[in-house]
Length: 353
Image: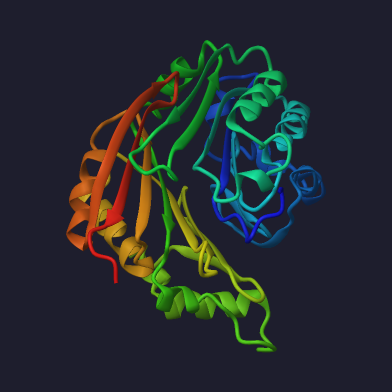
């Protein structure tokens, strides 16, 4: 009963924020913070999750790792881990908090999000249900994270709902005001299913192609048009192609990341795109980026989750996507302590080929 018919593409995503003992030092741009964690320590964390690093890149702001199951981003005071398959993502919390403590950093905020699994019965503890995940989070987060909220955001599509858990300490909002983060940034999480079959085939490798994952990944980036989603020519792409199929990419653009993951098998094809930005960005550029994502994958069904303290981003999502043949079927909003508002929108193709 617990055996799945395929690979679980929908990711689990965990974002942890930390602060130092000295609040002024915590704002120094060149402070290494969590980036001082050595590779062996990071791998110990990933061992608990049951995945490993396959490729990596970094700049002066953060380090980005492509994992055997999705991605890891390490900033001086923030870590984001996104994993698919049957990984046990939440088991990373305890070791990360302990390692951060050794660096005089204290956890001050947590956000956990995911969509609806295609193969929920295949998920191991603590991911057997959202109720179990929330219980695990409640038990394993430090008591200073006293403002907590869990919510399942529904949609008119039975197979698509958005699960959100947030936790923060009493000073989280104050620190955001001091650092200037509040009202400034947004996160877009896009989940796409039923990909165009012709496009999905481009994420399969030829048998015995003689290429490593990095080389094959770069070819897929060019062949599919993924390289053109971010128009900034100075951005760095760290891509990897799996054997016999599948693809992951991390984009590094200054202090911002983007990431793409593809499970192309017919019957449970899936792709995700995630990026961060500023509400002060050119909104037309954000809309164009959304359009390019849809044009690359041509999904029959997709959802867009926008996390932001401002309404300036999510209101443009429908206008960007609907002209491409996808109809908005539902839109729900919820508020979370220190995280701001989360808006969850779902779309389906108006015509099926």
